[in-house]
Image (cartoon, rainbow, N blue to C red; front, side, top):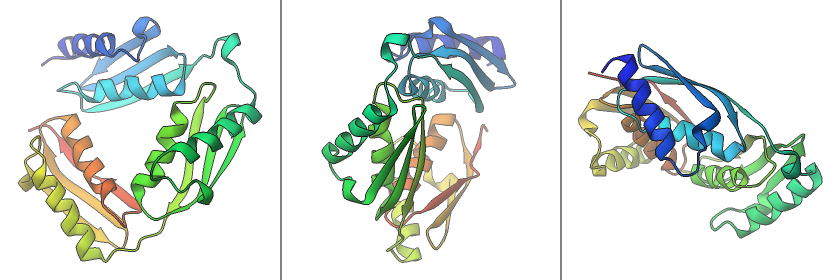
Length: 216
């Protein structure tokens, strides 16, 4: 697939994604690297646009340069965003809200605290993405590793083998404490994302280095 064809596929996928208004998004492609520029109306929409591009076969990397432009009637004071953030964390199942602190400055939400599993850290961030007025999220929540290294490695490898969309034999998993390193090669960008999510989902994981190559 050449860059022209890939660009058209990316544009089609952005148009197909209901949570993205692609009207003000420009797409550039060079050697499989997709660059997104333009304006979106929320932090959640920016993430949705990036996820849509990752789903397209042939995408090797993404340079995301989208700017968030909030209409004047949607601008919300930091105090109101903070109050909503605290509430939504309390409502999120599986998130220990009492162990997470929230700070908001100019629409950017900073989360700090400690949780037991990586999915709790991600769930907290995902909850904040949905709030109107948020222009960015800094996730400083720490994960306390409580699982032995061999168990971490085994659980990730088992998850990769269960995936119908991956050839697990092409991916290598290494674990050192709570840090996991992934290497190998996959056919498409979305497969790389599946492997990375599997690693982050394992209990005790505090950091993931993804060195998986796309293509071939």
